[in-house]
Image 1 (tube, rainbow, N blue to C red):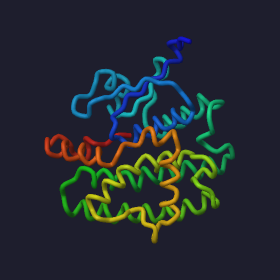
Image 2: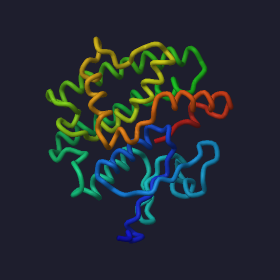
Image 3: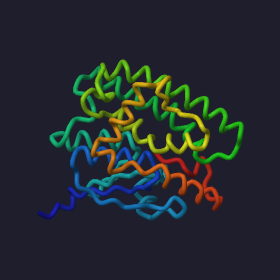
Image 4: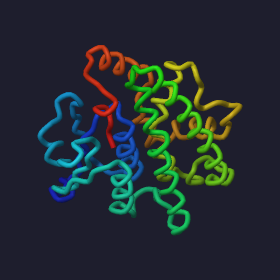
Length: 238
């Protein structure tokens, strides 16, 4: 059956981006058919610039002719528009929903910035500071997981929710950072519950189809840095 134009779904993205992965995981989870439109970090398309004229960043979800920007907003939009399809991404209870949003914002405030530095910076002082900040954020998220999961597999309990998607999108890059720094950011001694959570998250069909292999990210990083074409600011997606 042909999908009406106003119902067509497109996603402008870049495969190494954890922020794009979030939108893809949410679409998969809600069983939404969509067209993936890969963009170029170094030569941004007219469609991207038109669809996100303020930040000019991926991901951008286009539903019909309406663009939706910023990864967490996109995930919530998908959850609301396709509420009757697949499991809910946001909790129904207002308090639980507020807590999920709080920790999703925490991931982007405390984990994303040092991740960008580790991925793209060549400044040793900045890298050393980023390692400490990332370790501190992960330890805090270990405590949060224990409270939020209530002994179950995910932040959302039996199924993945907004926090799982927000944090889980970084799992492949965390593997890259381990190879760069020699530090296990997810450690069986210090973060045992997050180690278990990571394995469970990677096994979810909606996620394992999306998360890139760490080896491919390492090669992408080497290529981009060798070309001298990426700064921390330029690499930022939302």
